Image (cartoon, rainbow, N blue to C red):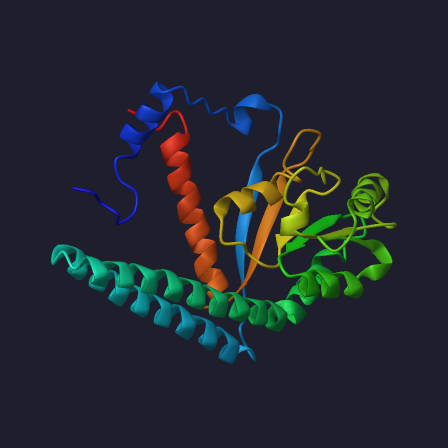
Length: 268
């Protein structure tokens, strides 16, 4: 019997993957001198933006309810061998999933903009230390642009609307400059989540969260990589009670499942 309610038989899965040639080497094993990394989820008070948080949660609840009802119809039509009804229900599931994703995507953007003043206040507080460099990542271009404009005197910006050459210049200046010259790197997850080294900083901030755990791991790896000499702190800023807070929890859970399935040492 197939079990789709979360992860099960992870030891068996790991054994089968490794038996068929999968080799996974962990960063902690390869880069033995790399300092450890700490992660924090920081819930910002939703005071004044409660309506945005409530809209997000209502949209999520609606999505879960409708998708659950469609899945029941799919199971019923499949059991009754109603082929026409089955394919209609499957199409309905796909259409509803796309529609709800579009709605939630728009609401998350709205939430990110509502959260922005608190993100800026938080960045000001941690940049008070004149010897500190910070990297902040966001998803939407207008969000990262507004963060950059707040700190334009000592910040660099890199997102998908900027040429690769200019993005590389931003990386190089951030890496070689003093904190007084440049203390903040503002980047988009999509454009800067892979292939860049930002080890001049040991403090990363996610102003917006992606859906996929792997994307979080990738942005963390911009700081937590070879040549990093300090312990890295990576902080996720979320609104209290928001969908982002839910996503942060899901990301942690998904990453744990991935680690259990792939990492050696779990099997007994």
